[in-house]
Image (cartoon, rainbow, N blue to C red; front, side):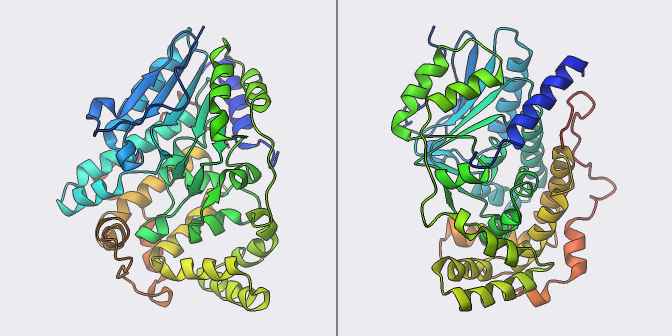
Amino acid sequence: MPSLAAAAAARRAGEALRRGVMGGRYLSSLRPSPATAAAPDSDEVLVEGKASARASVLNRPGHLNALTTTMGARLNKFYESWEDSPDIGFVMMKGSGRAFCAGGDVVGLRQLINEGKLDESKDFFRTLYSFIYVLGTYLKPHVAILDGVTMGGGGGVSIPGTFRVATDRAVFATPEVHIGFHPDAAASFYLSHLTGHVGEYLALTGEKLNGVDMLALGLATHYSMSEHLDLVDERLAKLVTDDPSVIDSSLAQYGDLVYPDKTSIVHRLAVIDKCFSHETVEEIVDALESEAAQLNEEWCTLALKRLKEASPLALKVSLRSIREGRYQTLDECLVREYRMSINGISKPFYHDFCEGVRARLVDKDLAPKWDPPALEFVSEDMVDSYFAPLGEFEPELKLPTEQREAFI
């Protein structure tokens, strides 16, 4: 990568991931019209814009814009061509309907696994993670409009970018432990870089955050009421720039000033750090039970309930993943997460993922039968195996780190 490009990447990355806590018509609309029928594969990612901006629109509203392999491939294709075009200054991403993106299409993934189509399952992770790396090293400013559900992989295709605008409709979570999986799609990178041990808390409980809390924690960089997005759109539509500072000031100027209310997660950070800094999941549960008995606060009780509903194996795997991510670069996290994901959908671990998706999203009986059924039965060897290198004939994830500079 030329030195100028490397400098641009470093500047963009620094602005994106170290932004302080609390801290002509180019686009047709920030709120695309909801589709009334299932979109064909070619319409699952739409393109809006002309002149100096482009917007990708995730367009599976009936599935909360859950990501498929085809969508990941189209995003890769679009973003690489837009980055190379001298006529495009910045890029945006948004979602159709009431969601930005609910993550990967895990129901479809479960079906592939049950049908024995593991190669297609691996293609999904490889394609999605490759796009996330492109986004995380993108040389042009990127604006994600998080107006609605933003969960799992939805965070992966937005948070590594430059700017994230949360709204009053935004709902963020990394709920993977409740479907027998681990927070992936770069979650071990961005969660581990949040203040204190709130990353462990979000990963292990899957708690939902609103847009104000997303801003407070640094998951979002700006905030706007959903009803004001047209004003933001109007302002961005007038910009002919590739300067992040110009886009930043425009988003701030047309955004809304908000403060956390009394129920906000920011008021719990001290207790969260106290409990979730412990070495093991068992110690975290014990500490949280002690705090719940003393504080008698609803959030403590709910956090304990979520921990006890989650897959015991997924809890231990996810805790280690966040802890390792704290000392790794984006590309290192994605390579490790790919290894974990492939192990997680293969024998002997695929049961919990398939069972979790069944219980939560297919049969919806909310009664998964985890294996192992309790924390005490999850051995260190099992967790080590989840992180183990792939087999001799199974390629690891290859990212273009020589052409695209990773950041810390």
